[in-house]
Amino acid sequence: MSTAASLARRSRWRVAEIVFWLVAFAAFFAPGGKQLLLNEIAILALFALSLDLILGYAGIISLGHAAFFGAGAYAAGIFCKMVMPDPTAGLLVAIIVAAVLGFATSFLVLRGSDLTRLMVTLAVALVLHEVANALPDWTGGADGLQGMTVGPLLGTFDFDLYGRTAYAYSLTTLFVLFLLARLIVRSPFGLSLMAIRRNPLRAAALGVPVHRRLIAAYTLGAAYAGAAGALLAQTTGYVSLDVLEFQRSADVLLTLIIGGTGWLYGGIAGAVIFKILQDVLSSTSPQFWMFWMGIFLVVLALVGRERLTAGVRGLVARVVRS
Amino acid sequence: MATILFDGVAYGMLLFVLACGLAVTLGLMNFVNLAHGAFAMAGGYVTVALMDKWGVPFVACLPVAFLAAATLGLVLERTLYVHMYGRSPLEQVLFSIGLVFIAVAVTDYFMGSSQRNIQLPAWLQGRREVLGASIGIYRSFLIVLCGALALALQLALMKTRFGSRLRAAVDDARVARGLGIPVGFVFAATFAVGSGLAGLGGALGVELLGLDPYFPLKFMVFFLIVVTVGGTSGLMGPFVASLLLGVADVAGKYYLSSALGGFVIYVVLIVVLVLRPHGLFARAR
Image 1 (tube, rainbow over the protein chains, first blue to last red):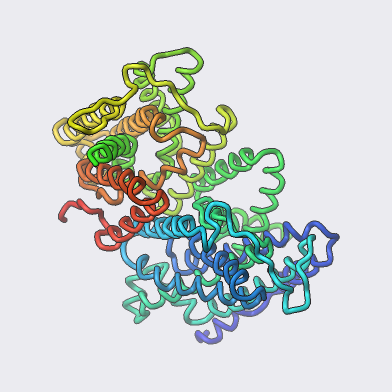
Image 2 (image 1 turned 180 degrees about the vertical axis):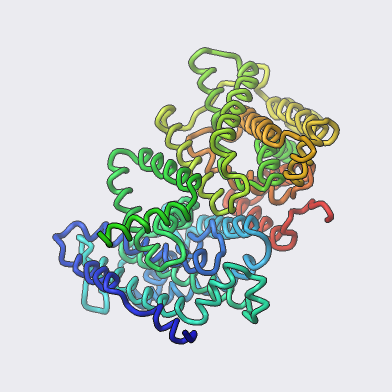
């Protein structure tokens, strides 16, 4: 089979995918009140998708992905306050800011081992956290950015209390960016990223410009994370320092691991499971949720991710067959 | 000026005792253990509980904190950590973050989420004027104790039979095993001692650093900085790095605002990591 044919076969739409998106959009008409949670799920899914581009496809481990989420959130918030309240323009600005930041810091993660990358990404997020904390005139410091009045979506739809507009906005953004990511990872560019993740030396020997591809992937992931941050800022009308905290980087890593790395629905599946579990478990107490999350991570690491996902996939295959 | 330097050195010494276990597991054994602070927290809470509930004197609590954290470290090493050696860094990160979450949740459940403090004995409180500088007595106690520990550890690693076995096991576990060195035992003992020292540091640090269930997350970065900046050539690198970090942190918070002080440290960390990925004091290979 030729490469082009193989790529075309891989990018064909499956029935399950179409059904999933139809259900997701139909949830807009669900009885009110649930959309707030759904909105959070869509934002987390986009955030996890952005990490998947970096971790699952390019193979760069990051412990500071919240840096770009936070940069996008603050960019959208400050743009809304100082320039104009239109959400779409704010979203674009946030994407650009996060992409520029991702491009600038991508040179830092090219060198060194996995451990160095862990530390550098962590440090970048910490630096941003300190910067945001040290500039209360811009960011509101520890009090958070207040007084954001987000304008109506596309000039017509106001953001309501029940999160309907917010959910439609976040889901549409997620869908559009997902389509783009789907195109990208199934292009020759995406294939070359996967080649780099498996074996950078061999990829370089095959003529793949490893450094340039990694920079591009990292910038792309940062831009996506910035979009997710902007969605959070605009739909909640508030930005606080916790958008840059380590906890957020750890949460998104966990979300992606739950859903599985290296396939685009991993982030979405992880976000659905993560948020619903969080909703159920933290209603008892936040510590309860943290405890079970810890247990899950330890078991996952001990059993091995491959074996666990393989087990789930086997189970699904058996259910489908019977 | 001299006071700030002194406080910084005391803080750095404390950081070294807290982080030197990590210097061995992460620096020498290449295990990404983000849960190191949990052992320090265990030591801290053991001290708080002993002093509050049974009125045990502070100095008597220190060995107990060491033993408690070391036992905890030994048990976890034998049951959980031992399966994670040689796995990918991502899996080690997930595993140790999971441990941190469990530690935070369990501590919060049993000890409450509020900040805990201890009452130091009277002979360790107060300040003295020495050569025009105001010297805290507890901080001089820290410097003497932690300095002695650092010296003892360096000697143990470099001069004793156990130290040479550990270095051999770290450099090449397979060859060391072939030479009859009980690698598993050496790793377990080292891990226990490292955790114990963290517990001791946690107990000593209650006064300076404070103690609440989020301790492992708050100070994780500092421990990691000590190890990554210090490099992996024994314990002298981490020792110098923790002193630098301690002085820089205290001075930065004093001369600049507290936010900018943190900013400087993290920027320096990034620069060091980019220019010298194996640490400032890496051994020439």
